[in-house]
Each structure stands twice: as structure tokens, then as C-alpha cells.
Length: 297
Image (tube, rainbow, N blue to C red; front, side):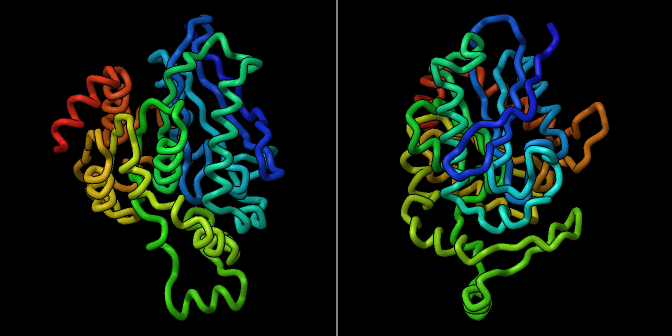
């Protein structure tokens, strides 16, 4: 059966910008486990082979969802370029948590257009990089999430902010700029980002969130990740009550992917991670909790 794709659907969020969302599924009218994917910093839902990943999950019987965080800098008209750089500058972790909550709530509404295709009690989150931190916090808060998967995820938000004189200069100017290495664009970061983090520091503590998890957690990381050190995977493994760790030798931060991805085949590093993720999703959640919960003691 062919995969149905519903792309660029606009979900209403809490922050006056639409959350542009894609759905991938086999239209067989059977309830399917839901998998929601959260992109990372300077990322977007159509980056690299995320589209191909959606097809693979749908082909394996999942209802796969990916979306652009409302303030990631893209627009509904152009979902792959950072044309709204002011929105990028106004983004923060709380907005991303709210966006993810809006997507979850939308999918589980009784009036959801494709409600006959989803298994309400089986909802997993996948997060890449910064999106992995967001997914971890949301999984600790949202009891309808049944499994968590993090790819090259950060284990701490606070340490990634500037310090000392650099932080003082950011506060004084109100903005600093970061280069998008792919496009060479100078993207603004408004000081509100740091203020919002400090105001919500307790909620945004990934260690605290990971320790509160009551669901199985699959952690994937590449040994050659120069963006987010492999030590972050070690932290998450140590903190999560029921973790499963997959360290991929020689894989980088994006597991061999790049943008745009025009090849039919996935790089072997990413294909390996996808296969391991499917194995994890297909396993019985309680059995995973028993197995990894016990081995963690």
C-alpha cells in the first residue's frame, strides 16, 4: 500500500505563528502507533532525509509526524529557508515545549481528521539534538507519551549559553548573531532567549526531567559527534530509569546525513539508527521497563 503524505498542515499554537506539520501513514483505517519527530537547533522538518525517515516509519506501520517549531525561522510558504529571522531571534525553549504540546493535543483531539488512523495510547517522541532535550522534558511532563527516542541529544541547556563578558555584551546589545554554517546567514539571538531560560531554569533541567521518566528511553549518539559530545549520551543513560543506548562508531552529529539529501539510500550510520529505533518501538514497553530498569540498579 502506498504511503499517504499530508504536508504543510498548519496547527495553531500558543505563540501567534502556525506550527507547520507533516503526516505520513498508510491509509488502511487501522489504528497505528504515533511517532512525533522534533528537529534541532537551526533545523527544520524538511532537512536532509527526515522525509525519507517519515516514509520508512509509515511503511513499518507507524503514523509519523514531523513539524517545524513555530519560531524556527522558516515560514509556511518556505519551509526550508530561514526567511523570518526575527522569529528565529524570538524563539526559546518554552515556545518549543508549547509547540510540541500543541501538536500532541491536536493529534489526540476527537475531531482530528485522521483519528481513525491513530492508536491513542501509543505515542512516542523522537528528538534530534536540541529537539532531544525538548522531547525529554516533554516526555517527563506529558503522561500520554509512552516511549522516548533521542538522537545526538543535548543533556543540558544552560552550559551552551555564553558566559562572562560575552554574556554581558549580549545583555547590553540585546542581540547576538550566530552563523548558519550551511547558508552563511547571520541569524539573530535576542537576549530574551537567555532571560526566558533563567526564568524557567528548573523546568528546563534535562537531568531532572530524565530522572522523572517512567517510560523506556532509546538513546542514539555518534562517536564522532563534534557538535554535541558523546558524554551527553552518557549523562542521559545514567539518568534515565529505563535507558537503552546505541553508540554508532564513526557517526557524526547527523549520522552521515546532509542537506539536501538526494540519494535513494540512507547512509549506513543513519540506517543503523533507524533500524534500532524500529526494534525499540516494536518491543513491549513494560518488558523494556523491567529489563532496563533492573539492569540500571
